[in-house]
Length: 108
Image 1 (tube, rainbow, N blue to C red):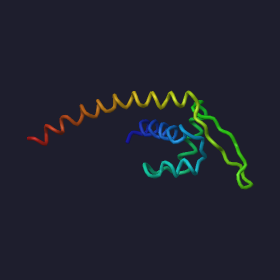
Image 2: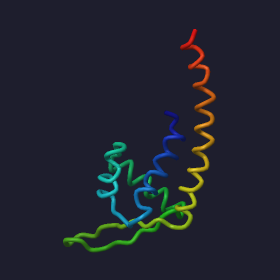
Image 3: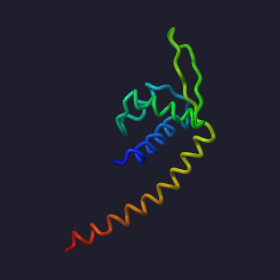
Image 4: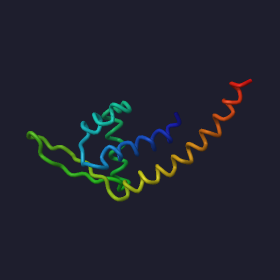
C-alpha cells in the first residue's frame, strides 16, 4: 500500500478510536486490534503527528504511581473524520472504475 495513503488511513483510525471517549496508548491499541495491528512505536508517532496538527490534545493523569497520557479529539480531529468520510466516497468510485475492467475480463 502507498505509504502516504496508509499514513492518512491510520491517522483517521486513531482519531476514530478516541472520538467517543478519551483514551491512552495501550487502550487505543487494544481497541484497534480486532481491525488492524498497530505497534506502539507506530501509534506514538501517529499521536504526536495528530497533536502537532491540533487534531487531539493530551493530558497526563497519575495512574498507579505513573503518569498516563490521555488523548482527546478536538473539533479539528472530528472534522478530519468527516473529511475522510467524504474522501471515501471518491475512493470507492475510483475502485469501482478500476475493478469494472476486471469484471469484463472474467467474462471473456
